[in-house]
Length: 52
Image (tube, rainbow, N blue to C red; front, side, top):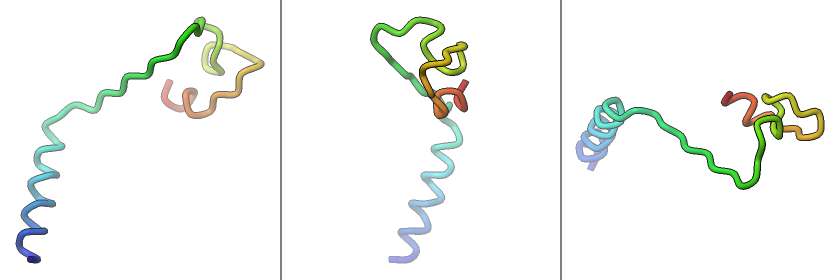
């Protein structure tokens, strides 16, 4: 069983290294200044700010 787990973990690391890291974030009715990184003083968006 340990050999199978080791093989799966090595295979998943090798496979993941070939794929690009892409994130798609969709939002409805948001303007360019409606997030913290866009200059909004009302919306507190620390996670989006970190991604930006």
